[in-house]
Image (cartoon, rainbow, N blue to C red; front, side, top):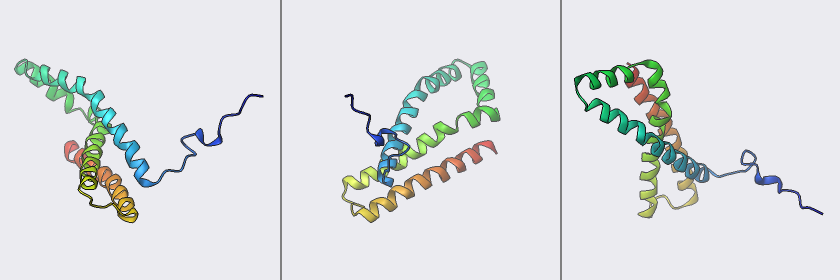
Length: 125
């Protein structure tokens, strides 16, 4: 008789502590940053090609729709940076008790959202 799959393989039904979600989001933000490298290098190369290339890149990045499409990468940069600082703190044995680790994880996730919204608001203005 074939075995049925375990019930808890559905990631949406899996309970994770805030530290687990932070770890998953840290990996996802790292992946988004890696995927953004070719586009960022292409923009850099195009902007350094001359005044016309720089103007084209500036015009492309000043469009509000492009700015909103860049929001995931802005969030990824903010989240990855803040989560990396938290990991450095853990390496220095700061925030190791469970309550502190949970509080720091929630704080990083909230601060990344607030910081990315602030950066997007500054960029849109």
